[in-house]
Image 1 (cartoon, rainbow, N blue to C red):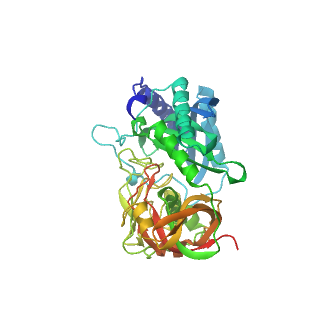
Image 2 (cartoon, rainbow, N blue to C red):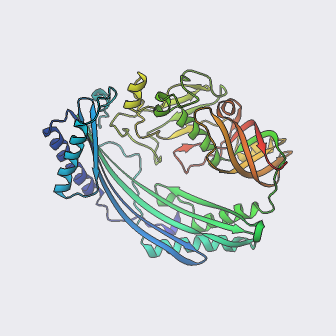
Length: 459
């Protein structure tokens, strides 16, 4: 991000990881000595700085350091877990004792236990798992972070005379270290950084006010947009929403902007995840192998993406990850499973304990502007509100705001509307995925055009 970034920093992360690994080894040994048949230990160490400013003044400055130790002990198929943030010897001893005591009093669970030993990830010959370019500490103190946040907000407030107020600007940076170890002999270290700059502004006055914002987030500070660009983008988005109108209830195509489109992928992931499936609380129970999307549609999970937000050589159980298709030619290829949910379903883990890794949605069209130009009459959605999604039935109903499109051009902003449908039908009705990739998430997708949805507004 040019001159505002200085990434030089004293890096003691390897020493800290070594300390965590030593603690993990000690706890594994203690639990086994108390009779546990299997044990797993997770250790984490996180540091961060965040500042918030508003209307040219400093509102908050927060510096944090969090550490955590979690021990899970298995006695056969009985499981007990305990955790602590206290690294003193007596606390660690008590944590192991608590995990073992809990396990001894729980019921047998046939699905309980570590992931199969044969599935554990193995480091390359040099003995260290790859990091996928995830470690980029940012050498920034509170004063410099405040200066960047103030510059971001000032750029936005000065960008348009219609910007009357501000919800503030923020700068944050953080680094995370973790070690996972289990009694199969697996030990994995991970480290990562995360940085962001954001701004939210208010345009107009009184009942005509509209709020919007913009943010940039990345693993490396040099990948962030400049504070001035973020502020100007926030101002542009807020001002563009002035004079918003409602729409009469109708059916029309709905184009989800890229930052909104990833929520559709998130609903898919939730519906094909193990917990929902073995509880039979998903509209996609028994859907593996079924055509859910058009035959050109694809989603690939890539855990090995350089600077990916969820890149990892192993999942939270130590299982080796792999680049695989979730959707291919519109067909659901597999579920999203850790070892516990896989056993409940009589299937194999998909190395998704702890969640999905980077999901890449294939594009079949140009960017958002081109998709808008191809619409005769429809709705461009740039904001979603509420949680009106029923994972059991797939029914979808959410508050929305955006822009009415007619004859390939944006006509005016709209708000106070609801968009509704059923996710299974919406998936099948997707007509295009744009190439305007939003890189700010582990779900990487462009805008998504759904051919028809109900848009409920003023009567």
